[in-house]
Length: 267
Image 1 (cartoon, one colour):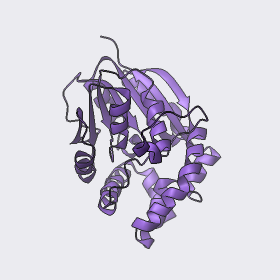
Image 2 (tube, rainbow, N blue to C red):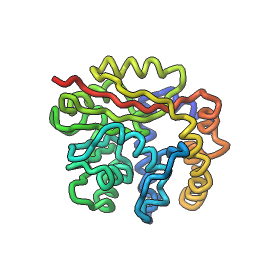
Image 3 (tube, rainbow, N blue to C red):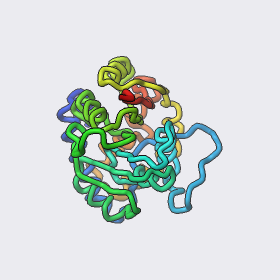
């Protein structure tokens, strides 16, 4: 299993294919619709943001969305989330941060269908699409949000070209994800080469680890309940639960979790 995971880490094309299969399979397994968010969460010890009671179980995951999306004022804006997954993040942003319209796009068709059925909020829509070939016109959005998704893509450069294309002049790119520590400099160069200007850059690995401490037991129990035993190690690894190599790579510093806020030229 670890050899297969290592190959997955080294091959962008294989990673993209396997992640698509994984998320489609997760949608198949989650017949009760329990899973609305799948990120690693965020905790920083600051006063807790107010949530409706129905959102409280997902607090740690929603705190990551809040930290990333609140880098700019989204009120009254047109927002696109690329890699919207199970839709909980886009739903939070739309209900709490006040965009005029929020659009989620995801590569996994089952996830899109789930979101369309589950998150029925006026002004919130979901579409099937590819992060490297977005199904939208140029200069259409005020902000593009991308949370813990881009590590699955075949080409970060192609994705960023699409981000710049669909953003309006002066639009915001709000991003968070993890990379091997040795690849961070190249990632930042790829961002600036796309034409985006980085306004905020923050390492949040410690905040992610603090959140994983609170999520690990819940995620392991969910996997044990829903996933066939032979596949559980792979799902444990995706969820970075205690004792997995992925969790250990965060702890050792081999993996770095970053948050970036960047803007397109004003025109």
